[in-house]
Amino acid sequence: MLKMQDILLRATETAKYILERIAVKPKLGIILGSGLGNCAEEIRDARVEIPYEEIPYFPKSHVAGH
Image 1 (cartoon, rainbow, N blue to C red):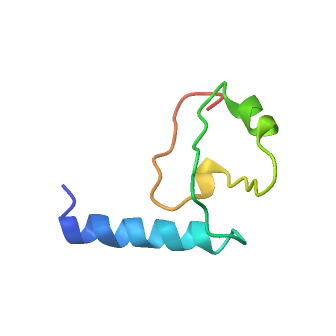
Image 2: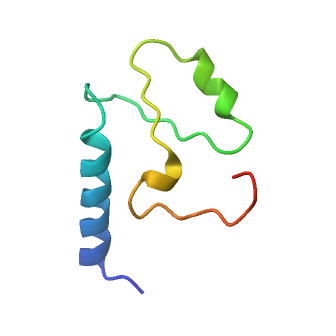
């Protein structure tokens, strides 16, 4: 089991990874799961797509197509 200190470190590293890939400071973040990818097409302006599997410490899906 992860200690709180390890969880905080991972969350900080994940946030840093995401912030290094965007040009603006977001007010809102949306994580779209399987079947919802088309929703991203409706978002205008400051849209940034980061593949889920590239984000550090995010769980990896073991289901085909996810």
